[in-house]
Length: 380
Image (cartoon, rainbow, N blue to C red; front, side, top):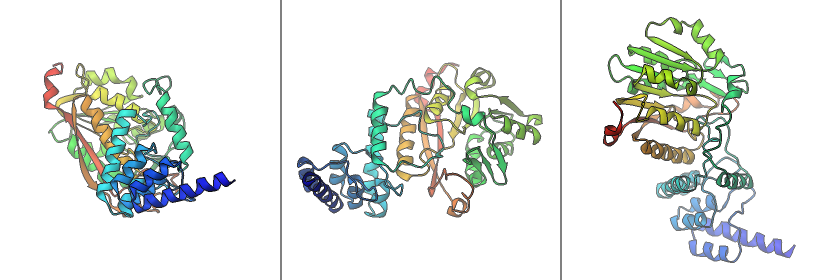
């Protein structure tokens, strides 16, 4: 009992020292046995308190002691939120982003087959679950995960419903919603920049971006869609009879041979549901395949960037990770900031939806192209 009291006293001192930004005292307390994995009654860990201080050395000390960068408190707030909102420190926030980015590249603690392309679940607030997950991720081979089963099979085999301004799956997750319309307009604009372009879109949903693409009068507009309810919706609304549209029924993974035959494309957009980051990586490997590329050498590729769309810190880290992986394929990535009208994603917008999949004020639209230095390696 006395030992527990001493531990609690040490942990309380540690949290206070973190909040004060006293990195020397933090080091002393850790050496004295204070657990870096402690938290207060609201789930705030030492990294939350350190970030709230804005002191880089304190943040660094806590992270180097082994505490994960991506912990959330019971309210779903990350250390990045505390750095920006409590400490008002962009420097501290940027340090957390860069640390998270380096950690993911070196350790691969992001389980690529568990990170959804578009967020439909809240971050876990319980620290021991997150730590347990990360231990599991470090011992499993990420290259073997998700290869033996279809990742979105449950989604493809259950009904989805078009209701007014939204498309919902059986669990009332938002597959697509009308608030995305301004974003899709910008995506269509960049991938249709060439007159009479050949365009590929993977994932029809509500058809928002496909309608935008049609306004640019492409010479060829290929749509890949796997869900039967969406295909029925497309047929009812005349998409199969449009003269410049080719609809491929099925998963994109099963249509690559046909896509190579129809390509290369001047513009490509990717926005599937129920798949994960590892699936998008696989698609990127096809887009920027130097032997049989889907993207023309002067083409533009983009994707719906819903990675970590519920939390700014996660989103910024995932953007850097995605950029790195695309660079490895011979692509350059530029994120074009688009301001989101917060009235379009307010509480009323998400009424009837299980979880919001976007909660940020800025959308980072990816514009990806072949790196000119790698063009010589591409088969003609």
